[in-house]
Length: 528
Image (tube, one colour):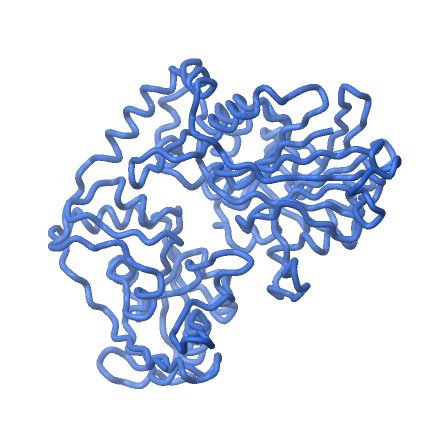
């Protein structure tokens, strides 16, 4: 049997980078074109979720979906011939109706053992048995990380219940084990351990793939969420994979029991799954669009008008800067401040009136043209985050800043500052470095991690006191404590705002053009 697996495609249907308006080798239509000649009755096509967020295409569609009788993501997966999929954490960002619109347009079956649908419109199955052309019975179940309950806005979960994924998967496995020849788990979550060293990466239950492999006995574990390239790993009889994000690479797995039993080369006992399937896999890059892609595009000509409307919307001028912001190098910005982050923080401070604000930036080094369009804003703020105000103490702020200071490491050979591997492995997480506004703070990078915050004051010079209470505005994502900021997550939320940050930034630019350089913090680093 063969499995073609995608995950974390994040709205990438067409081979285009909307922020730069340039072609790229990515997207579901390109994947569909690339795999069309290798699909047969013994091939399963599966997706691991996080489909409805990530590109302006989806942002535009979700705010104009009443104008169209198709769903662009569903069109991409349907063109592939997808059989089964599960939900990712970002698929919940837009509420029940957005998921329902997507699920109803999908030809594939939705499998998610730990999501209970109170309204009953999504057609979620806990598990399925798929019989291949050669008679092999494949038992399939799936689950999304239970951290959806921590991250997601309450209003988006009123019709849905997310339960413990381990328990739900165990129950599903009990149902399919004896009526299938091979078992497959689709898990929208990642590996909580370093796959090379076995070291624990986090104490949270955001990622539990290693636990699933050890405590349950699936043959194949299809993971996602971390955006980490895992071509193949064997964990206690379970074979795991994970493709990176944005539909730029996909996994191809082959499982063969005859080879395993025959003792073919490369099928030693330590390389066999629970049921003695020998599995091999590879991550394939998406190739440049060719004739097969153009045929798919022609068959989807009904989407052209939406794409034209999208481009018009993206190119709508909204204002300007006094001076262009060049793309900001990640390390340089972290050491010396980010003009883009200062703008985001100013938007949050003006909206909420909080004492302090913190924000993060996407992994890509993006800046802003002098003349700003909707495209530019959606390129630099790529998530549908809302805002929360937390009641924090000075001690909490200090602890959060110590986590930020952990972003830096000292190169033993050169003695120069570099980005810590903690923020690069197993997943690149520049977005977990926060920039603060309303503060005067200083890091001393010659000091040990956890002891680097040497100055902490208000902008007027007043000391921030450990036991004094303050207000901090941050994204709903960071407000959960995600990214190593449990100290923030444990604080009381005193206000929430429904507006999404991209819309707020667009409004800010419109009201304040030409926008000059914004200085709302004092920050320095003592270097080695």
